[in-house]
Length: 126
View (tube, rainbow, N blue to C red):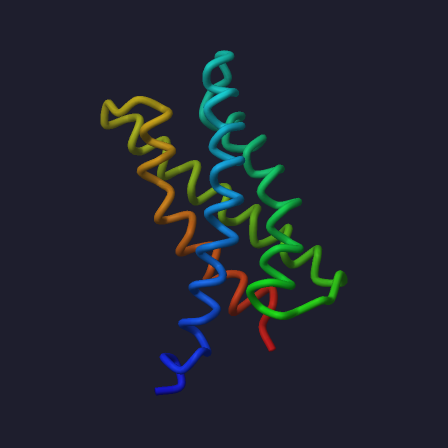
């Protein structure tokens, strides 16, 4: 029951809370960029920049209890991978005829899953 006694479940709950805060602001940036005519790659990039800056400290300290600022490069690398994967998913959804804004929302679960796994097992691993 290690995973249910405050370990992974507790981390996942904290990750979702920090992620909700970060997502609200990141999506605001994403939608604003789309509104001004930017394509989904550019909009996702600017939203990602905001998310990376806020997410590194929020997830490192609040979620994974890791205060090492030396992990910044790993965090950035993980988000490069996540950016490419999620942008491809958004592109696929758009190719299926879905609006860019809605495609971004549809890709959110993939982004959250990729992010949690990359941060837990690559960036902030113990």
